[in-house]
Length: 392
Image (cartoon, rainbow, N blue to C red; front, side, top):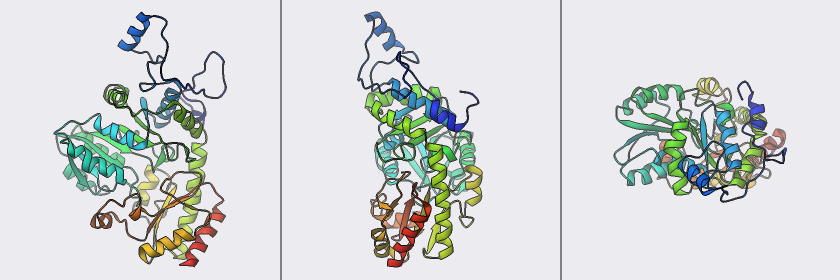
């Protein structure tokens, strides 16, 4: 609703109640819907109304609640919920592109996103040009007339490089290109990508939106024309829709999203500051630190450094593994944005398929560690990090 603040939207936006007047959002676990008549079925297949449903792969009341809530939070007209974050990424691109189209993308991306761009899309005749995302001049040189879309992570995985959304959007829009932003690291709490110029915003809801490691999910946000005329036909026919039960989980996760993200970011800043002060890590990467080369952009674009910290453990892979194995509270996994703090070694997990020279170019060194800060007491997390460093 107009005028509602973020935390109110996260609790109430998009709510639908049945004839029973339930307080909590209902889970409509049904694959199909009954029509009062054959004429009604015909009419609905011709054009379904805003609150009319045909088949769970096309839409569902619980899923629609989630889509409306995230669209309101993102400040866009509509959204489509997907089975995973990568289903959202693939859908946002594949639904738009045809053989012969040209995409310009940032080079620093999650490994699966790189696979989609380098392998899948190019296999079907889409031309892809990669640029160093932080270099606006490279965008300006690559985004030429005829480019159909640009794609980038607003904060890159895992080296926390920021891209100036407004600047890249101006360049893209000048040649009629669509701007597709994977905003998962920045979160919808700290980044308003649509206001900065993005046309389409993609999230893995598996991360902060669920925030408790329970379910895979994704969502694509954009204009009603893009979501319903471009994306929806592709998604509903290829089967990448979110399940109603997952949508219910995501709705409940959103209620505390603002509180969780802000608490996690506060702890991340304290941990990054301590790591930099103590000098136990040979390099600390956190946009909330003034030492980060894009600190000013982070403050202007997000107002926060976010919930993740990356740092180098001197001694390469062997030392990094000893550090990870010595942690007691922080868990080794490859997820992020969870209530539990998670540590990842990108070079051997999330980005392991990349050749060594490409890892080096992206700054994914053998000693790089990515820390997703959770909701534990920050003092306990700091003590855990310090004792793990003492082991190496």
